[in-house]
Length: 208
Image (tube, rainbow, N blue to C red; front, side):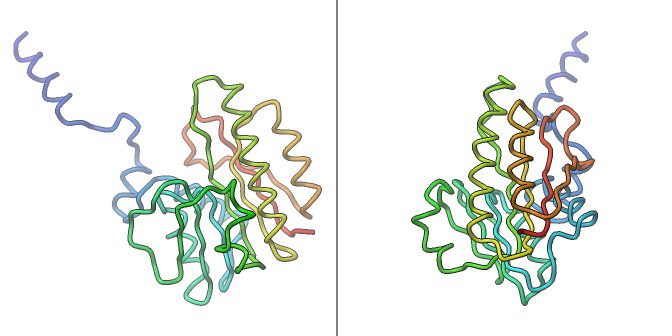
């Protein structure tokens, strides 16, 4: 009995992340700060949303995995811009610029005003969850609407838009809004999304 208690105590001390999986371990091995990079990797392999030389805006870019992956896709001749409420702590490549800012202040942000004509807008933004699916879905919808407004404002003709949204009552409305602005619109859930997650991605290509 005493041995069993000691074993449990040691298990607690190990501090193992209950959410850790093979994507988490792979991210650590490949020097990405989060497993979310593999969602973008799946999207890129299937839909080819980012090309060499592209200018890409990453909304909700912390902790920086998508910035690193996108930078590899555009090569040295492209550029990645990121915005998040949190500071990016990792070292970024020379072709990446990230600022700590609120996307809600987009209209006052010279950081973006001086860089029109993006080819891609990525949004992996998610609200602070409450545990209530209806509330969380509504908050996600509001963020997605803001991301779509940004994409509409700064994307060049034929530009691409990738946006995460929580499935809820407003999903169909948002999808309809996206379809009105892009030539092609697909729904995609990467295999690297956690099974219990309600998140899904809208992949929109060819801004009208």
